Length: 270
Image 1: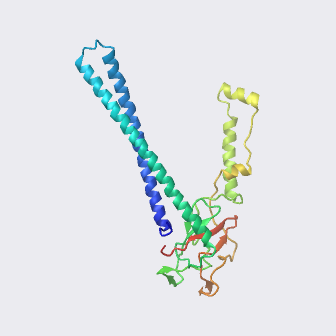
Image 2 (image 1 turned 90 degrees about the vertical axis):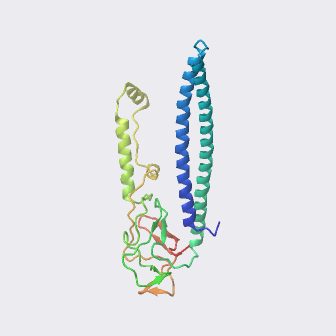
Image 3 (image 1 turned 60 degrees about the horizontal axis):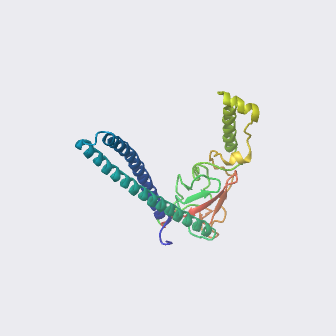
C-alpha cells in the first residue's frame, strides 16, 4: 500500500464514488421498475381471479405478469447487492486515502524534501486542501519544477483559499452564525397556524443565540491572512534562493485566524 501514491489512492476513491452513484441510480431504477411491474401483476391477477376463470388470454397475461414480477424482483435484489458492494468499496477507498493522509501528516515534521510549485497544503481550519502558487518563478527548479522559498506566503498569490474557514476567530464565521440565528428566529417568530400559537403559548417563544456551538456548525469565508514579514518556519538552514531559505515539506505557517498550515505533499513526483 505504501508504494501507491496519494494521487493514485484518490483517483481510485473518485472512481469508487462514481461506481457507487451509478449503482445507486441503477438500484433506484430497478426498484421503480419492480413497483410498476408489481402494480401490473396485481391488476392482471385480479382480472383473472375474479373473472370466470375460463379466459385463456387473461390466464396467459396473469402468468406473464407473474414471470415479469419475478424477474423484476430478481433484478432489484441484484442491484441491491451491487449497491452494497459499491458502498463498501467506496468506504474502503476513502479509508485508504485518509490513512495515507494521516501518515503524511505524521511524517511532515521530519521531511526534508524540497517543496516546489503546486505543493499541496492543508489548514487546520480549512474546508479542503489547496496548493502553493507562484506568479513568477525564482529562477531555480527542482525536478524541473519551480522551487519555493519561505517567503512565498502572499495571500491569494501564494496561499489560495482553503474553500471555507472553521476558525471561531474569523469574523466572517461569526457573521454566518448571526445570519443563521436571525433566519431561525424569524422562522420561530412566525405564527402561521393554530398549532404554532398553541405551542408558543405553552412552551414560550424561544430564540436562537449565537454561541460557540452554533458557530462550530457554520462555515466562514477563507481569506488567509498573515502579519507583515511572515515567512514559513523551519526552512532550509544552508540552501537559499535570492536570500530566502528554500521551502521544505516540514515547514509550517500560521494564519492570523489561528489556522496551522502544513505541507501535505511537496509537489515533487510521488
